[in-house]
Length: 70
Length: 266
Image 1 (cartoon, rainbow over the protein chains, first blue to last red):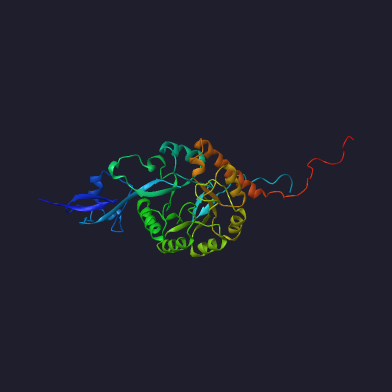
Image 2 (cartoon, helix red, strand yellow):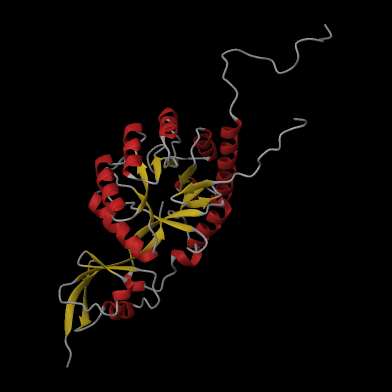
């Protein structure tokens, strides 16, 4: 049976299945076809690498998008 | 030559980092009551470039409507900003994320000092500008109305210089028109007044000074009727540009009658 790992997403603790990728995480959150950018441990994860990038315990992720601003 | 020289009545616009824009009004997308109001106001302003902020996605409701659905990036040039960044590191990190989210290099850098003035922190701005330019960004930079700082930013490779008219969101207008004019006179890249515009006459004044464009947000978003103010700003920027090109009459301390002084009946 697969376990889960703890990561932090946008400052909130979160459990994800062991072996999950960045792509899987976005899917779990409900960002299906997202216009977002992802940073993992202060490094940008390019869109092309979402599927291949596996999450590790303790990873800190930022998922951002554009909102109104001046 | 006989007759009147034809008036070049169409403004051919301005160019920043090789991109051409007809509208000389750049507007922010923040502080509106709704995304519908944002879309209607921007439409009425005629702006082709809009500033946007980069923020965390709301994880508890990822399906909520997004700015892109109302202000489509294929119609408007998105200019990601670094609003809320108080250090060079935060600004650079934010714009790297923006580049990844949007896929383009043209950005607005602003690194702010503390409240209550949120005045540009120029030391941090230089540091961030250097890192961003080295990383391939095209940087439109919010800065103090300081000709020495403005020149240095231009020499570093910033693609537009954007001195404040007055503090962000203050609506105080162009507080120091002489320094704005000095910056325009020395700059080879576009100069925009960014921040401080409160109403249409402020935007017209900025353009009369010779700015290439004006950047504003709150003046529209916080007007009682934002769509109408957006329309006013569009007209003001066009009027100010025309007045600049036309060249104002000289000021005189004394009256100079407009009607002939001869042929009077008495």
